[in-house]
Length: 123
Image 1 (cartoon, rainbow, N blue to C red):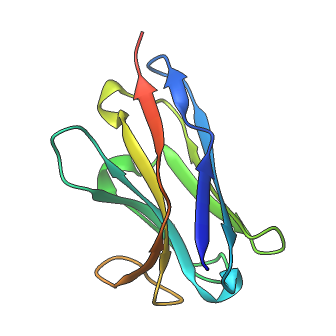
Image 2 (cartoon, one colour):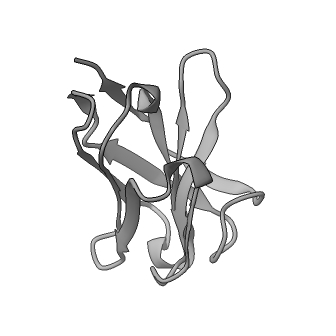
């Protein structure tokens, strides 16, 4: 069965950086768009970034542009999210997702979800 396993979360100080990884298994990774969502305490889950199956079509939440990058290694079935200049409001559980559309993830059904990894920004 399909599985997405996130790693790389933790606690960092404001202004710091984190790199999240997501390892996929049990499905044909390179035929799905992949992306990240996050959910802060008391808030709805929101879109962070996505990348199409080939790695060339990338989308970012407007509020995060310039501070994040997304990439994938289809040979390793792994998705990455690099986050820089982290702010307290970035504190959330970050979820990896596989999209049912091979190119876009926003406003499209999600095929698989990971369990999430906690990111806490605190001094």
